[in-house]
Structure formats: C-alpha cells, structure tokens
Image (cartoon, rainbow, N blue to C red; front, side):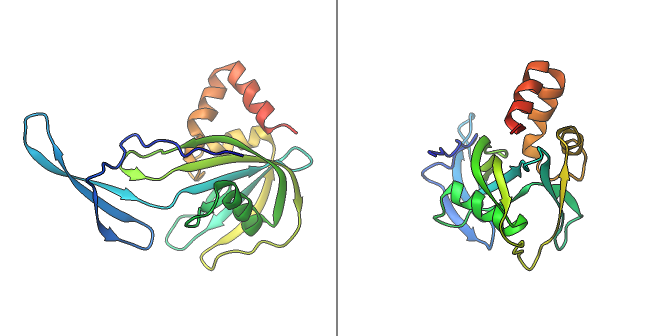
Length: 193
C-alpha cells in the first residue's frame, strides 16, 4: 500500500530553525515578512505522526477502547498511537492494533489522512481494519489502561460525537454522513464486512 503523507496547511519553510527538541514536540521558528514590510518571528511545533485503527470484528461490530492515561480524563477511541521514527505507516497501524488489542487484521483500508492543525507538523492516518482475529493478549505501555469494547455501527456513530471520544479527526465525516444519506451509505459500506 503506497501511503502518501498529507500536506500541511502551513508547511515549515526552508529557513525554519529548530530552537527546541522535546520528548514529543520540537519547536521551529523563522522570520516571516509581513504585508506591511515588517518581520515577525513565526513558530510551529513538530511531532511524530500517528495512526488510528478501527477494527471491524467478524460479527460486524466495531472494536473500540476505553482508556485511561496519566494526566488525562478517561476517554473512548480507536486503537492507535505514534509512528516510530523511520517506521512505515501501515506497519505502525498493525503494531498499534496488536499492542493495544491483541488483534491482527488481514486488510487495512486507509479511510483518511490529514494534518489537522496548521501550527503543528503532524499527520494522522485513520484505518478501518477487517479480517481481524485475536492472536495475543494486549501489550500495553506503562502509561495505558485499556478496556476493549465492541459496538454496533450506530453505537459507534453516537459515541463518535460525544465529548469523551478522543479521535476528533473523524467527527466531520460522521456529521456529514448524518446529513447526507449517500455519505451515510458510503460510510456503512466502509465499515461492513
């Protein structure tokens, strides 16, 4: 699968310089000429890309996670996490699915890829996984408590619009599907076996 990285809405210019290297975020700054001829320092964060995976179980239900992480309110969302440095996007999706759920999938459909925040150089890749089967117990990071839950398609649509649902990048597509019967049918097809 050839997965192209989505373009940033505000790409880092060639003259941007890294001014801080953090554990998760790096900070870049550059001099930006303004319309009145003045110059201002602009700034942008850069972080590792992430993958999000919605597995569809053999019974057609969608596997979600109820999660707790230190310093964060409990939330519901998909399996997923950071893409390791140099890691292939699809390999990261497979790894995160296995680590957080203990499942493998025979098919990964790239549903969407976007850079959701213009001031952060960060791509999010959202997959729908099918042909899933349990092959192991989850292998969680020290900062993760995860409980698996399977939901119907309609329950998934309802949960996706709730405040505690973390994967906000899908929210626009869910709302569009609710307003447009053709988009709802397409979304149902994407999640059907």
